[in-house]
Length: 203
Ligand code: GLN
Image (cartoon, rainbow, N blue to C red):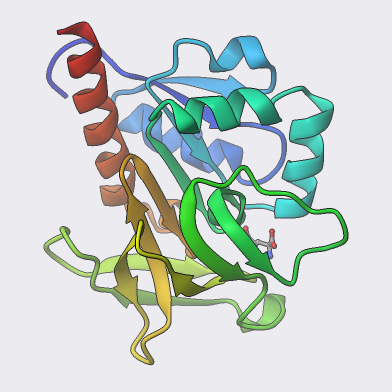
């Protein structure tokens, strides 16, 4: 990685925090586990891991992180959400529990648990726009992106056409977990956005 290391936060309220942290460290980033608003200050990018979106939502409110994260997204912070993290970045969700909120930012609708229960988990390889070879992807009680609004761009779909990855400005969301397959290229995409934004801010 050229230049000074990037500081990348991993929202560490619940979910597969460690896998993302290890992968990002392996890519040369300084990783900060974000549990409090102070830990969000100064990050160049943020990962919202998979887990249980309703729990992460609730804990983000309890820990005073909801508004700081929304403000950071509005301010253009590069954020990558996987699975539950994608749900949290979506402007609209289907199958939410009562009172469940999202941070929003991605002009999409996602359907929670669209592939059924835990037994319906599966691994596959996908073509992702902007990435040369097939991407290894694990789906675990994954959401499906059922509407892609004009602001967002679909960058990967399953063979049946179901959209499973989107990008919008500095926001990236995937229904699947690349971090469980040692697949680094989506995280590298986050790091590239973070590097560009940092350079623009320092210029
Ligand atoms: N089904 C979970 C949710 O709704 C997401 C599953 C995952 O992140 N692996 O939050």
